[in-house]
Each structure stands twice: as structure tokens, then as C-alpha cells.
Image (tube, rainbow, N blue to C red):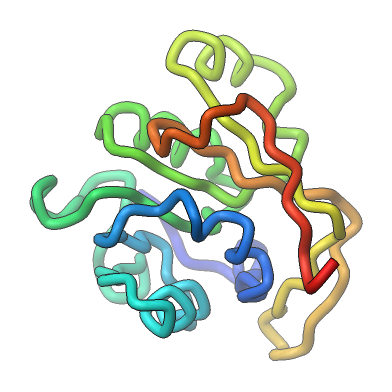
Amino acid sequence: MLKANKVNDFQTPVIALDPLIPYLPHRIWECACGKGNIVNYLSSKGFNVLASDINDGHDFLVWSPSLDSFDAIVTNPPYSLKDEFLKRCYLLQKPFALLMPLTTLEGKRQLWLEKYGIEIILLDKILNFETPSGEGTGSWFATAWFTNWLNIGKQITFGKLGGR
């Protein structure tokens, strides 16, 4: 069972969503919503967002809403559980976008990515995640949107952050 902890509590800066928005369907499930940064931003852009989190008793790894209540999963999963989140997304067979470190391309995950497919939106900047203390910090690793079934049209897409 997924446990909430501060090691995995890095809230998504909303700037990370802009390169993803053109590819998203209207109904989104944010399954690890934390403080709600993704939920609030996508809602402000007109998306219908269903929010859940381990902290409200909804563990993504064992629970999901009705599959006909959402069209895609969009989340920044706990990085220590990125394998489990990726597997679960493939099992649910719904379009998804997971914000994960580029190291997701390494190791055994390559087998799943090759078997089930992946489209990646690479970001042109290192993100400044909001930490448990409430302050942002530049991460030491690059992240990207790992997506499938969103019909991006390319296996790798280069996304620009912040008005360039």
C-alpha cells in the first residue's frame, strides 16, 4: 500500500503543464493530487478534473474511480513509486501523462516502454518543485512528461517552459 511521506512530497509547478495541455482530453483524473496544483491549474483552463490522493484514502495502486468517469490520468507520481504508477497506468489502459525523471528511461522500464508504447515531452528547463516546507527548490534532475495514448504524434516532443 502506498504511504504518504515527505520524501515523495514535491508539488508540481504549474508551468510544467503548459506543454502537455494541447494533448489532453477534457476529463482528467489526477490520482496523486497532493495540494492540488495540477487540479487547480487544469480546472482553471476548463478541464473537468477528478482529484484523489493517498491522503484522502484513495491509493492509486489499488483504487480507481469508474473507468468511464475520466478520459486520461495526469499526475506527478511519487518518484519512489514511479515503477508502480507506470505499471498501473498501463494496466488501466487509459491515456496518461506522468511527470517523471528522465532516469525513468533506464533499466527494466525500457521493456514496458517498448512493449506498451511511450511518447515523451521533454522540458527545456529544470523544474522548481514546491517542497514540504512550502519553498520551491530547483531539482538536480531533469523531468519529462511520459505519456501514452494521448496521440501526441511523436515519440519525443520538446516542450518550452515560460514564454520562449
